[in-house]
Length: 360
Image (cartoon, rainbow, N blue to C red; front, side):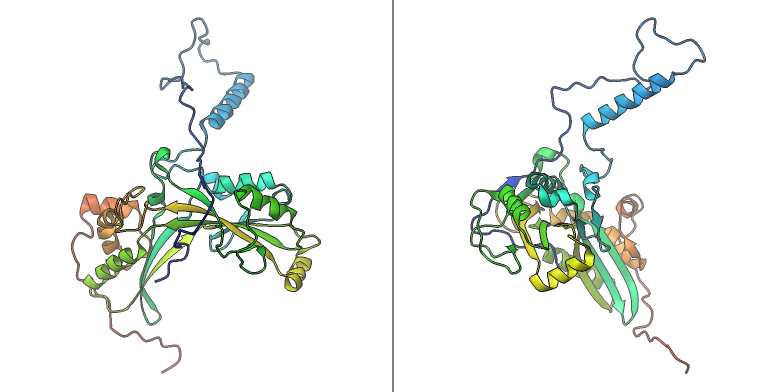
């Protein structure tokens, strides 16, 4: 089992900040309801028949729409977690080909500690994307390869129920604290994120990195893996089964800009090393404690509830030898049409598969 991005948490002394997601309009802001046809015109302002709005009216309406959108905060997408999705693709950043790391060499982030701290706090308000991959192979043949997205299990419907937080490296905890090797020094006391950002900006190193890691906590991946393997066994599959827990969108990396060019930076890093600041994490708990501990509360639902909801769609997808995502559409078909709610006889083909690459 592979479970990157799911660390054990609980260092001696850490400095933590509660994440504050972008809020909706304040309670005292009143939104004026409109009819389906728009706001009721004032008496005497009804335009004559067949007339249209003037260019000035259109321009004013566009300005009002822009102001209204900004006041309401991030765009909400029905059926998706309530997040500011623009934060996954900010200006001057590039996403790695494996979708794990968002990186930037923007100069202002290496010269302005307040700007760097603000960016880290903003990026901490959106979670990583944890996924489960279940793959069945026999030799070189892939019989099935499915993925499920678990990100919605980290974000409650009500922002007030969120418990994600920012956690800085604790006293006595080994980590990259601005050097080329892990260490327990330096310490910043109660300075927290702001002090680490200040140290990064003032670091004269030719090559330096500041990293924010988004991590998932208290998800029982071992229990989920056991359920998945048991389900595959009921389908009489005799190949090799791999269950992997992947986490994408899990790292934000800031590097100081190249002083001369990329080649110079590469050579400089070979001789002097790279000063690394891996001192801050955005922690996204699946639950308040580990599975089985007393008083445990899950942010959205427990592993058991999730499994009962997705067991049939997963069974059906594997029975169809799918290579792709298992989505809400599969869940809907399981509920509406009963797909996957019974064990099926599946023809997996010959027990041994041979690849013939030459002439016989």
